[in-house]
Length: 321
Image 1: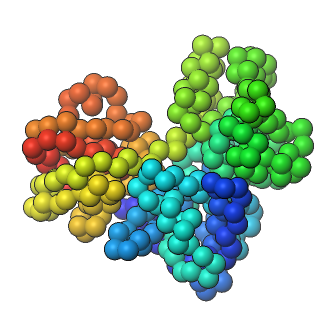
Image 2: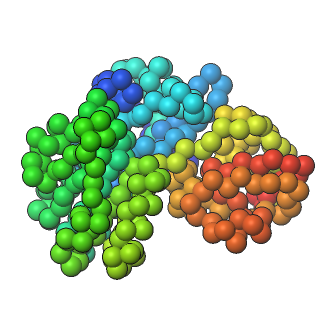
């Protein structure tokens, strides 16, 4: 069972162009009902019906966890991706009816922490907006360090600085500014938890720096924004269902399985949570894993696959589905 199995009918209440590459979308329940409660760091899955193709993409909620009359997300346009962000930017208008999942949180604040240190890169700022609202309301110590490529791409940087003042530090590459991670992580009180969301390289640097400075692994939290990659179409046999399916060039294996009506668990849809891990019955070819869940030994064994982000090239792939 997956969060996206029971979708909520919503109407697009507002669309705001934040900058040339980012738009904010706001949703209300079609009946005016309250939407499900969530905590900072949660995401929803947005269903997109794009000219015969059904896509389900996860996006972090950035609206206040204390206001349930609407949800808000931000979407960064990617013209080289599978088309989901282009659909959102080009097709979604106020008044349009869509479906979303209930919130799922794989990146929540650890409320046992004595302080929350948040590090964001680019569109990775979105989960922190809700987290900061939550932390501010609860009166718990927090600070945000937000890096962007340029001032023009730094979505919400000014408004966050206005709302949260000294809790926010900003850095723009085009201004020659950068975060000194070693200094930042070396000068935190005991009991601090660090949270990072943004480009893969930033996440790796924060995790490696924290580890080298002796931070407990349980105090280091990160969330990857990983979209399923495009690629060549491929065929898969689902052993339990007894059917063959075709995965399209701009379709994920998970989406193809769902389209066949075959049950499959999933949650993050980005190769991070492990919910859709599936046994490989037979593999004559190469699996492009692309996930953050399996280790190198498991990948080499070709006995497990994460259908949300993995692709295949070869003669035969058979799954225990």
